[in-house]
Length: 240
Image 1 (tube, rainbow, N blue to C red):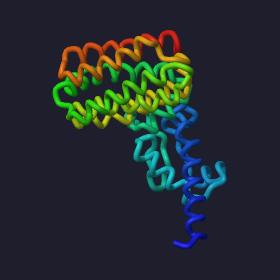
Image 2: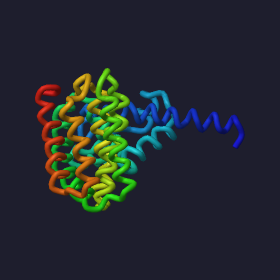
Image 3: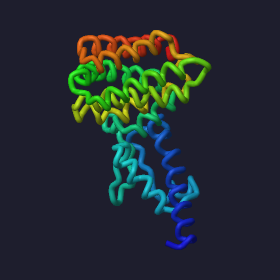
């Protein structure tokens, strides 16, 4: 590939990402209500991009079930019931909108249903390497829990919960790793977090890592349930 071709490809990808970054949030925020028909030519003119860029963006939105494209009809916005609400990008867009508090509660309730069970399974099935990972990230949470280091704290928090889900040896739970990562990231980016995490929450992550390492499923499940329930209670203060 020539340098000119590479530059052209980079520009096209940039335009595609920019359009997707405007259309996706607009649809999830309700700016385009369900049933709205979006025409390729109109979108190209409105957002000053080519029809090819519009079509590429529409393909991605179709994969998320946000829209449906039909010949001679155009691109129709689908109702929220049709959306792939587990898609991390859809989650990110919805958390950026006015519906954020409800979304956070919905996602945190999902975590409350899944992660305690995953922690119990991890205590039974985690490998020594996974136990070491959990311990590493739990200690990372301790190190970054003071001094308003939320971006660094987030790195360890996401990694910790991914390991729990993966170590459960349940492929369905493991696939929720991106979902949990999206909600933890959204909670931080939209400042639905205390400037420093509560010491009790940090301690409980350490306790989960210890319970998993010791093979104590009862303790792992109990403490993880408290973590998720506390996260839900925090929303009443931070995102009423």
